[in-house]
Image 1: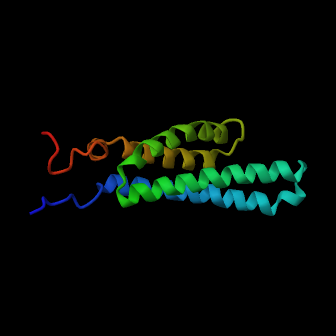
Image 2: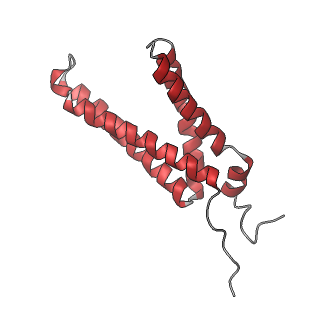
Image 3: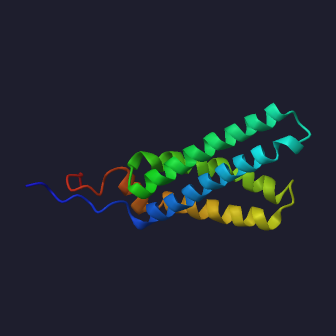
Length: 137
């Protein structure tokens, strides 16, 4: 008889996964908006389409990582943590040079909460497989 498998990732991981999926979707929406506005840009269309492709790739990767977290894939925790750390300069840029205080604070709160969910003790134990029945105690 097989030992009972854990039900899945802890709630913190699922909540963080939803947040990362939303971040990925935001990247994809931004890529679509860039494509739609590429004709009216001051830059050559190729530059704008290249930037849109970059955001599409990053957005799709983030969405895949978020789905991995929601579905309980242990590999997805580390890229999600790195993504949150890479979003910190974006938050700074929104609050400081761009003077988008409200957007920067909201983005910063989402990034901070997602990061804290991902580094919580239960999330760490889950990512290391310490919740499995045969895990060392």
